[in-house]
Amino acid sequence: MANTAILRDVAQAVLRLFPWPTEPGLRTVGTPGPESPVIITGNYDLTVRRVLAALRGLDAWVVVASSRGINVWCAAAGGMLSTAQVITALKTSGIEQRVSQRRALLPQLAATGVEAREVARRSGWKLRFGPVYAEDLPRYLAAGSRKDDSMRRVRFATRERLEMACAWAGPASILLALVAAFFRPAWAIPLVVQSWAIAIMVFMVYDRLPGGEMITRRRWLLTWPLAAGLSALVAALFSGGTAAVAAAVVSATALLALLTFDFDGSTPIEGGSHFDSRDWAITLDTDLCKGVYSCWEVCPEACFEKLEDTRKVEISQHQRCVKCGACVVQCPQDALFFTDQEGRRIDPAVIRRFKLNLIGSRGVDTGSDPGV
Ligand code: SF4
Ligand code: SF4
Image 1: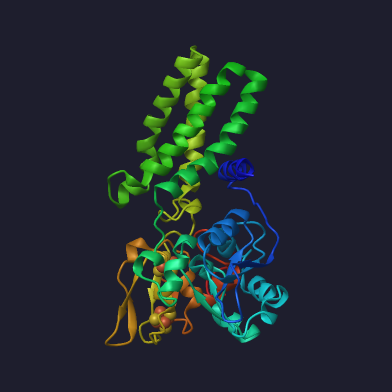
Image 2 (image 1 turned 135 degrees about the vertical axis):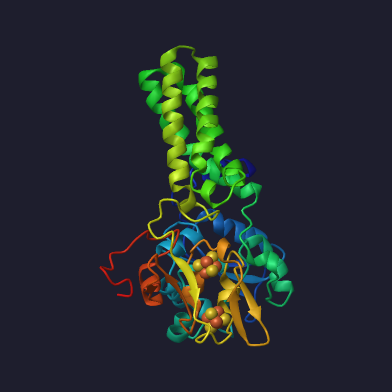
């Protein structure tokens, strides 16, 4: 049993880029009653297992909504975990017959795709956005459903970086080994070693390289000599021969380009270098702001600061914004929006409708008017 679980963990780590659905519906932790907390999550198997494990020892209901087997943030950003999916789960899972209240908790990272106000209007359920990480759920619940700063921010810690490295290195090394097995079996091992080394280097080191904005967008040029040199060395050690070294340099370049070109869009580390809208800026209309603080609650980068005296917010950490769009989606006043390179306002309705954000849709044809 334990072996099966470990095998599943390894398989999910390596195949993380692919959907891994589990059955949507209602789960229980402990012996929940009518007043027990209701926690909603997406039906990515790993996510559900982590939520259930985090809640061990408590009594809670877990409603698993369809996210097409994709993790919460990617599914919410891409429109697979949306308002409709959450309402469907609440209405069909049987939770309404089990509890006496209509309050539920969503992972904070679902805020990019699930409109809490719409869920309340259409289903009667009041949603709160809980902590970013499932492991913080017990602390959050013990604190009376309150988040401190440590529960609000995406940490992108070493474990997550390694998980992302596995997610890319796994499929890349399998593919390269298969190709090598057909043409040059002796190259298979160096190519696998190279895939893992580059993926780990990119995810562990890439954004930690020194330098300002100018270097940020050209960092792959700094990492290329390292990756190509390392690959050439491995190829020379394993296979020898000029052809093997040349192949290693070419494949290292291709893999590095793949990871760093789309790296920004596949992780929350920084804005995308190949994201057409990367120069959009999050903008606040302070006249419209009524201090509901939904933006402050859902921002995974803690870009906002509450101004208690005026009951408004300010964007105090502009440079951290990863353009996830969560604050735009949740602001009830439409006080937050993106502005493009020409300073034009992108209507929040467009962001909500098309899931136009860093990690979801990369572009939408709005013609000459971005507010369409
Ligand atoms: S910007 Fe919007 S969500 Fe943020 S405090 Fe103001 S009204 Fe509330
Ligand atoms: S300020 Fe940026 S990072 Fe924060 S919620 Fe808004 S779009 Fe996302």
